[in-house]
Length: 219
Image (cartoon, rainbow, N blue to C red; front, top):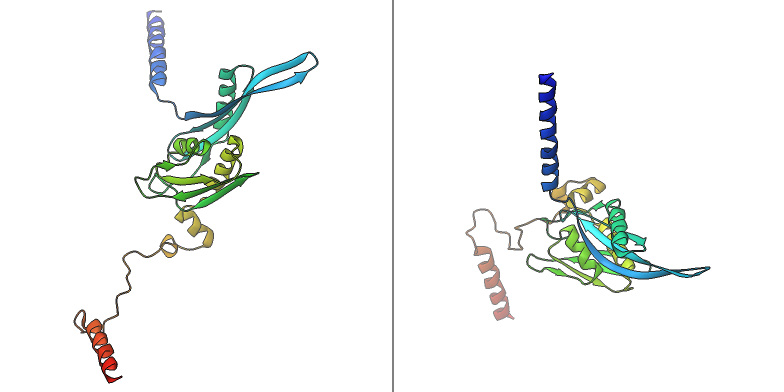
């Protein structure tokens, strides 16, 4: 009997410890409220008012999603939108973990968003809903421009449409049946004149210049 009671006590002590460890863990996704609107529904007795929320969530490491929710109260609408966003998470390949691999364009309805890569230190040059998507995705250098509808829902959907089109060099090479080195531009190449074997460096350029000067004098 004493042994069973001791085991029970140890089990009771272990429960709260696991709970504390779970509480200390950081949340996997961060969320950003993009837009919230008051909506109404006309019924027989009058109008019923509620709220519609648009939320973007992401782990800031290449995963992002968006969702919308409606409820009579703002906190409940945001909670529904956050849960909907977590169910629509997508993964986007990033170059050096900070920018896009190539320029892309996304469309949805009347919304059109153009996204371009940027060098380190540029920052996020985008406004409104697009900035929220890039921040939750983990992009730190990008230039984006919305040239279509300014509706936040269309802008977010157009941004996601473009992000789904992005391909990393590995994905592009696999699609074309080539190696990554074959599709990337060669580095360190220049257009210097080809020198003959055994010829001192620069002699080819000197000889070509001398020949040009001689032809000019003869003419």
